[in-house]
Length: 501
Ligand SMILES: [Zn+2]
Image (cartoon, rainbow, N blue to C red; front, side, top):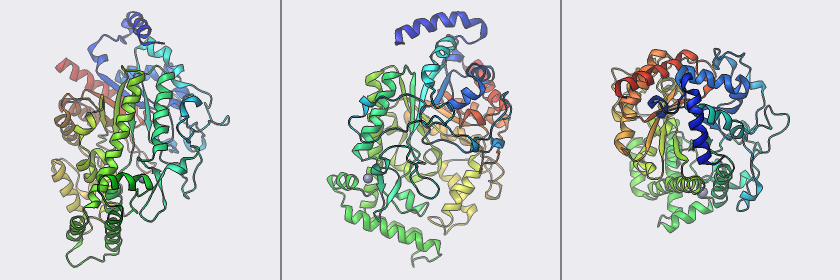
């Protein structure tokens, strides 16, 4: 369906549906209320039934629908999935799902050796064509369709063996300091970039979509080594060439990163240099300025990818809204990333930015993902409580309203966190791009339920609006969101509209 025809059809549909409260013309409906959802949820619950639930509870007007399942929450226990959607939840660990929810066309992939996964007939819904199947409800209900695509990651199993989901994937992986293959693609690899470009062109040529949400949940070599003690990457031939052309010596960069790696290895054994860990890290950065240059170029390569994606989609459908998913480490705790990649830079080629602002699960994540790593590495000279208080101070969170270290496992961050982070994005980009706050509902922890509190979800949603959000994307996954929390988001949106119009 072309765009003009769609608008005409929508206009007709909105007249028919006005009495049911789904009209396109209400201001409430115009403000983004999206939800991240996986296609199998809609087939499980029924397309009409799931949309009824979403529109009844939160007045959802946009689906951020997974186009590819190369990187997504999977293998979850039934206890963490919402029990109140009106169907009997099944154990995802015993199910086999497709990795590709759309149809691909070979002619688009002439410039790349990579090929998408071919769904197998023994996978549930393997033959579905979700964006095509949703065109009818899209026009009837005025609900928008956004493709949600994240950079493939999870392409090796727990033993490090490639899963073979994407043909030739091994050829585009990063190369670490010691010459070993990393777990993700190199952003400077021309074959990977060509595959990404082909995927976007293929998808937007064949489907009438309202937009795209793309993101890569990755960090750079400085964070890999200092926060997590990983062997840093990438030092492949394409990265060496790129950096050499920028005047950054690859040999000195490798030597500098090796020194950092050794410092962190020793810190994990509580073996500290005479001047202490932090001072010696800083000395290494002074001596090997190539470390910082290499790190900055890594994200410059990602900005080129985002720009390429933006231009590719716009060249096919100029009305499609293209925006970036900013994952939790990037939106919140990776200070190196935040320093290297400003929201202002990101917004130069974006129609919207969607930062993850999951306040409740931030408590367990801070303790289990962040402090557990930092305490034995970069910040091993501080106590856990000192790390937490420093983190609050640097990020501008009110320590009196956030949990102390020992409370992090049980308590989420307060909704003040959502306000502060949203305010930061808004001040950085102003009206340059829209901002859709990613509000997290019922996100599990370690495959155990960590249920949201509707009052806290209401306040977080209101805070997002107060700090300048143009809309909300309910996250992380629809199938985790319990009805009272969906209703809390809907109530906040309604109250905000009544206050502000
Ligand atoms: Zn590389």
